[in-house]
Length: 167
Image (cartoon, rainbow, N blue to C red; front, top):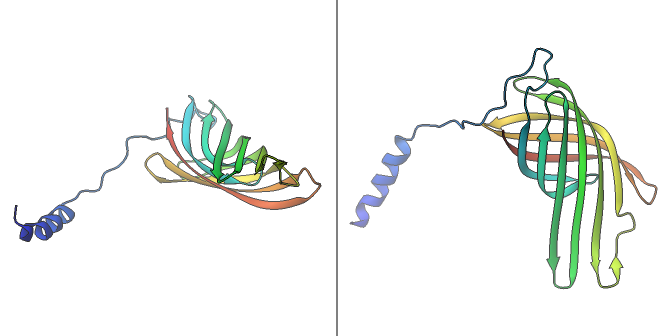
């Protein structure tokens, strides 16, 4: 095919593209506002209390959900990893937003053969958060947790996440 046709063909494809919607949506809510079946989510999370990395989330029927987070990276002889979890309780769950209370805990490691170089590897946090749908089954969430470090420091720190939900 002649190269002359590449640009007009690409323009035609873009001009006649129809936006599509994802088929994944959250299930119906019960009469009290809670979910009526389990919903699962996979994504990424970033937080000082619960961890940084890949994330799995499960919403139980009703108002409770949990999240497991973990990540690892190795550069040269230094290894860094973390793992943690979070428990959430929904205050408000609407079509476009969810507000919840959260409690999280995590462990962080960074170092080589000599051990963990972090002064405060253990963390625990408590606070509130919110979640909104972006497109189809994708949702973004943000939280502010009072994070207690194992060295005695306490800081109000943000956490963010992005998940794709299915059931």
